[in-house]
Amino acid sequence: MTLLGTLGWMPRGARETTCFAVRSGPSLLLFDAGTGLRRLLDPEHVGLLAGAEEVHLFLSHYHLDHVCGLAYLSGVLAGHDVVIHPPAETLTGVDPLAAVAELVRRPYNPVDLADMKRVRVRPASAENEVAGHVVRLRSQHHSDTSVSFRLDDELVIATDTSPDPDAALFAEGAGLWLHEAWYWAGDPALAAVPEELRPGYAAHSEATAVAGLAALAGVARLILVHLNPLAGERSYLPMRDAARTVFAHTDVVDDGTVAATSAPV
Ligand SMILES: [Zn+2]
Ligand SMILES: [Zn+2]
Image (cartoon, rainbow, N blue to C red; front, side, top):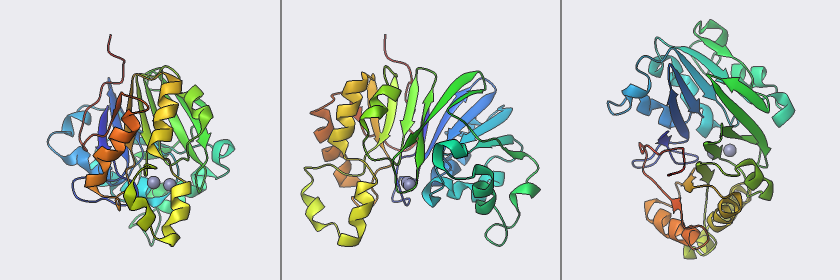
């Protein structure tokens, strides 16, 4: 799988917002459509799309840093049939068809979703068969309910969530867990976080807590994603090191990194 965008909220420097890609035979699976979606145009990533007969785009929730790529979907994915899989209403309490149509309509977009002939919307429920894979969804606590994804027994993606012990069960035994980490408890810069931003911290995850969940789940590798753009590039390695004291196989990687989803034998 390829990490096309590893930041939350806004792109900054060399990092884009959340988007992850898995190429599987004739299908490309995408998880979230943050600004990282545009990296599919980069020469080093065009192979992900080459020959792809169908593109499946799963959405974790509707916050704009995860869906702003819908505005350039027809440009980045030109010539491809695209199925958008927003989470079913039973998982989030939000009508998925209305929510996606609302994001892609005039006057915010030059065309309505219904006018995009190669794009369909098929809500994803708790368990789905897509492109020969089993994709499971699980509701998460966030400022608006989000979902995490499990792709077969290999890959789990949990972004935009506060840490949840039940998430360890969902991720149990996976080869790779991408989990968000917005901050780490030992960061001396935390004291300077403005009051108005603190509620946002409660809707996201602390890195050592995430590492504890990874240890509990027995995953092979944890990569911290949806990094906090305000914290800045210099804060990510100290955060990783703090997480490593709890779970040694923890990494922070650059955008564009390709990571194996199966555990090393
Ligand atoms: Zn986000
Ligand atoms: Zn969010």
